[in-house]
Amino acid sequence: MNFDKSGDTQIDPTVILKSYKPDDIVIGKGTWIGAFCYLNGYGGIELGRCVGIGPHCTILSSEHDLYADVDRPIIHAPLKVGKVTLKDGCDIGAGCVILPGVTVGFGAMVAAGMVVREDVEDYAVVRHNQYLLWKYRKDEQWRKI
Image (cartoon, rainbow, N blue to C red; front, side, top):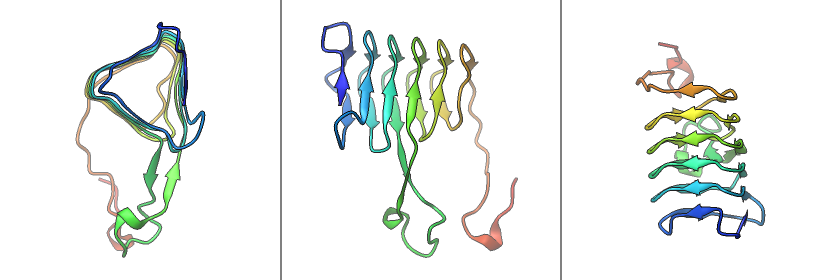
């Protein structure tokens, strides 16, 4: 784990930074991470300078491969990794979940409660979550809704 220790970076004492090797979580100068956040750096997390992360956020850089073998428990499936990058000056609202492989662009704003599954462009403001059944895990049941 690598972060600015000058005092400019603020990480609430309740934050969990799960690091597996040196530099798998990189935190830029002036970044603020709010209470009760969880960052899992298995696939790599890079936070730019002056990034804001509201309380109760989760950032994941790995996930189980749901399709490796659908007849065995998901917890025993291999992991897929995807580096998460939050670029300089972006802000993540309270309660957000950032999924593996996502990049949030320069100066972008992610509204509270979002589940971010795809990249957010520079200076974009994204909001609104809807439940959407996407597909089923078994081949014979695959269909998009």
